[in-house]
Length: 332
Image 1 (tube, one colour):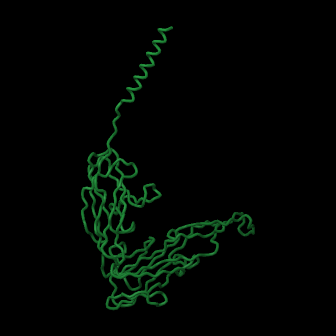
Image 2 (cartoon, one colour):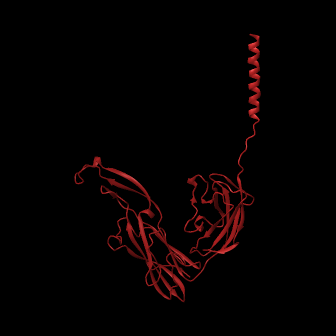
Image 3 (cartoon, rainbow, N blue to C red):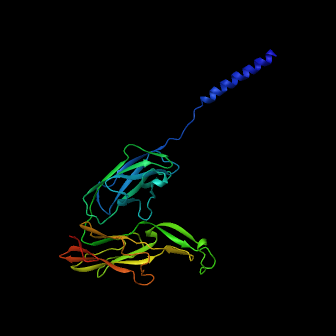
C-alpha cells in the first residue's frame, strides 16, 4: 500500500512539472505591417485638382491593410473625396463603427506600396486659400500600423472664372401622414378599419427638381439632388453676355410611392434654395420655403411645373440678382 501511494505521489509531481513546462512554451505572433506615408505629390493645388499620396509597406501582408482618412481642419467632408473618381474608396460614417466621417483606404494584399488620391471639390464659394489637414489611422482589421507621421497637409487655392454657376438644393427630412384603406370595398364607409400611418422621408427621394437659365447655356436635368451647374462639371456652364436672364426651376416630378389603397393626408411645402454665382468671384442664395407644395403641378404629369425664381441682370459683366418678386438680392 505504501508503494502504491509512493507511485501516485510521483505521478502528481511529474504532472505538476509538465504543467509548469507548458506555461513556459514560447508562442510566436505575426508582426503588424508598418506603413509609411512616403510621398505627398503636391503641397499646393487649386480647387478641382488632386493630390497623390503614396504609402510604402515594410513587410507586405497577405490581407488588405485598412486605414481611415479623415479631415481634421481646413474644410469639411463635402470639400473632398478619395480615389479614382470612377472607383472611389468607400466613405465611412459614424454609423459604420469607424468613428467620425471619412474614407476607407485599403492597401491591397501583398502590396509593397499603394497610391491613392485626394480630390478637392470645385465649388461656387468665394473664399481664400485653405490648408487642408488630414489624419490617416488604422481601422477595421487593424493589420497595419502607421509608421511615424500620420498627418497629410496641403494648401487649396480658390478657383475663379467668369462662368455662371448654380446650385439647387432641396434635401429635407419630411414627416407626413397617409390614409391606408383596409376594407375590401373602397367606396364603402368603414373608417374603423382604415389606418393613419406616419411616414418619414428625405425629399431628395420624393422630388425631382430641374433648373435652367433662359437664353443661356446653363441647365441641369440630371436627377441629382442637389442639381449643380459649375465649370467643368457634367453640365458645363458659360459666361453670360450683358442682358437679362430668368432662372427657372421646374418641379419635374413628385412621387411618394403610395400604393393604390393609400393617400396623403393634407399637404406640405417643398422648400428649396437656389444659389447663383460667378464661380469663385460672386455668390448669393435665395430660399423659397413654400413656392411649391405636394399638390403642385409637375411637368411630368401636366407640363405646369416651371416657375421663374430669380432674374440675373448682367451689365458690363457684373451681376445683379433679383428674386421672383423683382427685389434686388445681391449685386456684384
